[in-house]
Each structure stands twice: as C-alpha cells, then as structure tokens.
Length: 130
Length: 277
Image (cartoon, rainbow over the protein chains, first blue to last red):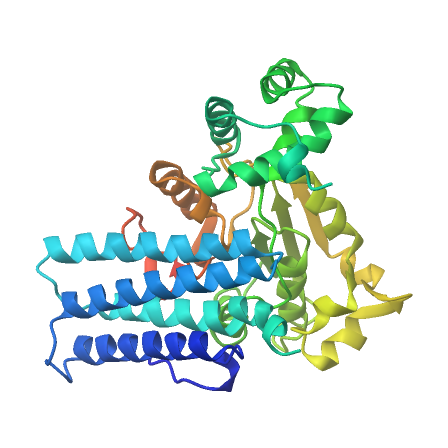
C-alpha cells in the first residue's frame, strides 16, 4: 500500500500541510526501500528521520491547537504519543534484528497517516478555514 | 471562574493513588498529561459530595460498596471521541471481503451473523457496523444479525441507546443513509426505533477475567482502547478476543495500535486487521 497525497489530507494550515506531506513522502521512501526499489539510504536512518519529523510536527501542532482552545486536544495528543511509542518500539526491534526493511511496518505507518491526517486532523480543519 | 486556578487541587501522590485504582479496575493507564483532566472533571463531583480533597474522595470511592462512585470515576477519565464510519477502511473491508467470505462460510447455516463492537462509545461505531451489514445485498432476510455493543462508561451507553445525534456529527455519513435510517427531530437526527432495536447495548469491562459469551463472533471491533492499556493487559485482551472469535473471524483494532510487538495467534491481514485461523 502506497499512500497517495491528495486534497483530503489538506488541513488548511500551510506549515502543517507541508509537514504532513514530508512525512508521507518519507514513508513512501521507506515503502520503496522495503519493496527493494531503492537502496540510497539505510532503513534505520529513514526511520530516525521520520521520528524527528514527527516529534517536531506533533509538538508544533499541539501547541497551535492548544492556543486555539481546541476541545479534542487530549485525544489528539493520545494518538500522537501512541504513534511515537510505536515508532520507538519499531526502532528498538529493528535495530536488534539488523534494520531489515519491513512492509508490515510501512503499511502500518501509511495506514496511520491516512487515518490520522485524513480523519483525526480533519476534525480541527474548521479552525483554519473560517 | 476558571477552575483551573480556583478548584480543588490534586497533588502528585493523590494522582498516583487514583492512577493505580483506575488501572486496577479498568486497565486504563493514565498518562501524566491526564492529571489536569482528572482534576477538572472530578472537581464538581467532589464538591457536590461535600468533600474538600481528592484524598477524601479516594476514600469514599473505596468505601462505596455499590461501586457507583467507581463508575463515575471511570466515566470521568475514559475517552470517547468517535464518529460515523471512523476509519473507513474497516467498513470497506467488511463490505468487500469479510461479509461475503463469512456468508459463504455459513451458506449451510446457521444463518446468524455475530458482530461485537467492544468499545462502542456513544454508538456511532456499532450503528455504522449495522448500516454496513444492512446495506450488504448478500445478507438477505433469512440472516439474523446479532450485534452486541459494549462499553465501560455508563454515560456513553446512555447516549448510544438513544441514537440521537446533532446534525454536525452526521457529516461522515454517506448521504443516502441519513434519510433512510434517521428521523430529523428538532435539530437532531434520531435513529429509527426499529434499527436502534437491532443493537444490544451492554455495560462491559474488557479486563473481566473471563468473557461470558456463549457464541463466537464473526467480527470484533476494538478500536482505540488498547492504546490506554499496558502490554500485559493488551496481550491478555487479545488472547480473550481470539477465544471469542469464530474460526475465520476478524478482529479490527485502531489505527494507532499494532500487534507487531504483541504475542498472539492471529493472522495479520492488513494494517489493524487480523484473522483467527
């Protein structure tokens, strides 16, 4: 499964849209690596890049939503933290197993992005589209 | 006045005792960011009871044999964000794969289709499952749909049973379904009685040691629950779900959840969807 970027993922806040797109592209690169189409970067390095992107984006997004008094912030944070925990677990496991690219991991990440950005983030879209 | 600054405060030690109690009773592991939520949501309750501190309230919860206060406490900390057809992929999977497959498996009977929404919140999830089943052409009138919907929060169950939703919550419902299944009463959409009656709502605690079900389920949805559980609680729950599924049955979990690092005997089908062999 490859995640195709599209309008349904646009939340209407330019920096966030760019960060989401960057994450989707990174997961796309990881998918290609897992499908053995590209070998440019190592899998663990891509995973680390995704983790740092996610950390940066989540904290900015949460700060902005808090500033705007968003009423579902706690639940939103839960989804973020849970993904981060998953990412750390995946990273730990992958390192132990020699950093083998895995389609199960990329499918999980692509699905997470599709639901989180397409559905969960969609719930705050109204804050930016007045 | 904002009770963030003027309410009854909870200190770290008190928060720890509540965190432990909630974990023991519900499996929910409160993260540190829930301290404020706990304080805000329980302030009114503590004052209504004529108490002055969280420690006094803790004592009362423990001494209440009826466990009513414990229910209030768990209601206050459980998370209930949901919407119709949330995580649309699961419903597409039911329509395209799971339902036809299960109907075929049972083509010689029994003509019962058993589905469980294990953390049904305010009802959007089980009702979305119901619409998905009713809209499926293969599920003809000879089939008996058994749809169980449970939650640990009594507050959400009260809402779920009513099946009444403000218009703003109906955006994610495909157009044709709205008029077919709901009546517009004042400003709310109310699910027609005969459809409401097709879902059996029950209070249920997922950390119950043994599941009491006589029959196996074809489909179980348990989404965005395990993110609040620790690993042993999660593994135990998956083991119980596996036992409650019919062979060939499917378990759908939330998009933030993965069984990749959990020991289990289910077959991975696609992200967040697992099958009992």
